[in-house]
Structures are given as structure tokens and as C-alpha cells.
Length: 447
Image 1 (cartoon, rainbow, N blue to C red):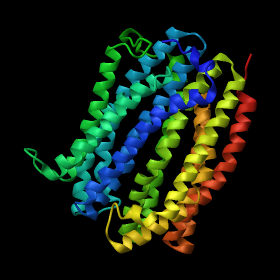
Image 2 (tube, rainbow, N blue to C red):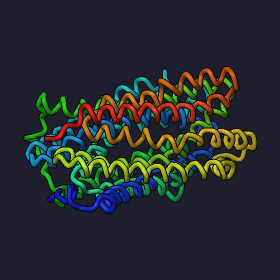
Image 3 (cartoon, rainbow, N blue to C red):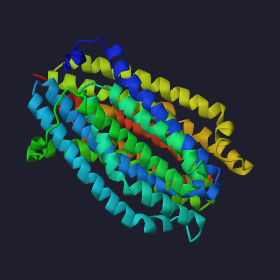
Image 4 (tube, rainbow, N blue to C red):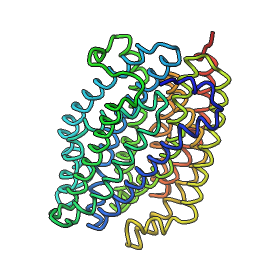
């Protein structure tokens, strides 16, 4: 497959052709997350709270997978842009093997930590029991997720966005179809309740991975994956992990944030843990399309960085920033105008709906400005500046929002937790602009 189009095709059509398939697949994934929560909520608020408590650990698996996948994608695209196909193939093969190892380690570690983690937030009862049941299944198949996402990032690195779109969409649709079958028991399938939601999730992930293997067997990738090239050199490991580790930490920060905020919100009432769980599901419907733009932007930037095309990189950044700001503005309007109907998709309890609607309105005030840090962080990863990207995310997810939430909760109660979101987004946007332009001037050099 010839990747020359990434430095010759007009920027806007190129970015849209790279981003739209990923936006579509991510919207389907967001829809699955919402539908899954709606089905689980029909079992009761305790069931939805149990799944919400496991969600940070699921997010951690995804974070490690996507973060390291970003390292693979940046390396492969850079080598292709520099005309070094053999090194690109070795980066892809080695990255796939390392992703498999990561999955095994994550499964073992998180299942061992699951009981102690859940007992931080739930005592003996249905919430704890359901959380254990759900978590053991979804975390036990972490390898499926890590390898699947490695394939996704390798396909993206060569400019093929259609195969990841088809595979992710197929997995999500499988989840949506199987959720009611396994949760409530339809036909010959017994009623499994929360365990059924976990089984449907794992089967959906397996469908995605199987499709990647089928597509690769049909030679749709454009580069060769080889067992003889899967053992990484020290130099290659350094390149993959210098981007992958900060990116994984960046992606994992939301898990830490959710855990901390669950602790703060739970001090007021368990319904606020439920509200946080619903919000983080809903925000994926907004932020994942923006992430689709970022994922379309990354290979374009990495390729043109390797090719020394500075002007195309600048134009790509301007266009992607504008697109992301539009998406975030639309999300803010949705949460400001229709918060109560959105909450009623998950619960009919009037107090929960009222409190949740207030939370959505306050939090959404920071959506638009967050587009600056989202774009800057993704661009720095594409250019190999993983640590700088991590610093931006650390400011956004921990260093600013956690102290603001703690202090706000002491002054304004639970509303202070919600207000911490827009406050942190504004401060992070200012810091990310400074960090990005500093890195561009000092680190991005062209011959």
C-alpha cells in the first residue's frame, strides 16, 4: 500500500477521510456503552452502581492498550514517512507481541486486585457481589482487548481507517444485540443478569479481534507482520515505550480520576457515584468523536513529520482544532438544554434525575475549552513527544481537578465537585497551549 497520499492529498479531505470512519465506529462504541448501562439499569440502581465501580479498571485496560498502540502507530507511520519499510514492519510485529504480553499481565494483576478495590466503595451486598461477578469476566479477557487495539493502531498507522471501523462497529453491535439476550435470558439462553452483560462484552471484543485476523489474512494491511521480526531491539523498545508509556499513563488518568471522585461523591450519597458513572458513559458520546478526529490526525502528522512537511503539519493542526471545537460546542449545548431527559434514560428516580441534570449542566461548561488540550495532547503524541502529552493530561485529570474537587466539595458540597471540571479545563487549556508551542519550537526540527 502506497502512503504517499498522506503528503499530497488536500488536508481537509484527507483528515475527514481518516477521521470519519473512526468517528463513526467510536459513536457506535459510545452508543453501546449507553445502551449497555440502560439494560443493566433495568436490574436496579445497585446493578448499575456495581458496573460503574468496575468501569475504572476496564478503562485502565483500554488505556494501556490504546496508549501503547499510539506508540506503535507513531513509530510505524514515522518509518513509512521516512521510507524505511523494514523498520516499520518490525515496529508493528514487535508491538503486537508486546501488546499480547501486556494483556496477560493486566488480567492477572487486576483480577487479584479486584476484591480490595471494590471494598473501597461497597460493603457486603448485591453491589459488591455483582461487581465481583462482572469484573472477573471482563478483566479476565484483557488480552483480547490489548491485541485487538494493537491491530487497530497498526491499520491506522498505514492510513487504513475502514478496517478498524468495520471491526469496532461489528464488536459493538454484537454487544448491543447480545446484551438483552444474556442479561434477561431470551430463548434457550438462561437469565444471567450482570454476568450476562460481562459475557456480551467479552464476546463483542472477540468478534472484533477475529475480524482483524480475517482482514489481515486477506492482505489488507499493506505491511507484513512476521514472527521473525517480533522480538524488539532496545532501540525499538525505547521508541515504542517513550511514546507508549506516557500515552498509557495519559489514558489511565481518567480511571484514577473516577476512583478519586467516586470517593469524594460517595461521602454525600451513593446516588452521586451513580451520577458520575452515567456522566462518564455520556461524555464518551462527546469526547470519542473528538478522539476520532485526533486518531485521524495522528498518522497524518507522524507521516509528514517523517517526510519533513512542516507546512502540511501546521495546516492539519488548524483544521483538526476547528473540527474538535465544533464537536465540543455541540456537546455543551446538548447537556445544557436536555440534561433531565438524558438522565431519565438511566433512572426514573426523580431525585437522581434532578441532581444528575444539575451535574451535567455544570460540567458541560468546560467542554469547548477542553478541545484545546485534547488537540495539543494528541498532536504531541504523534510527534513523539509523549512526556509533554502526559504532562497536559496530568494537569487535566489529576493535578488541577482533584484539588479543585476536594476544595469545592468542602465549600459548596457536591456542586463543588461538578464545578471542578470546567475550572480544571480552563486552566489546562492555557497550560497546554504553552507546552505545545514550546515543544514545537524546541524539539520539532526539519532538515
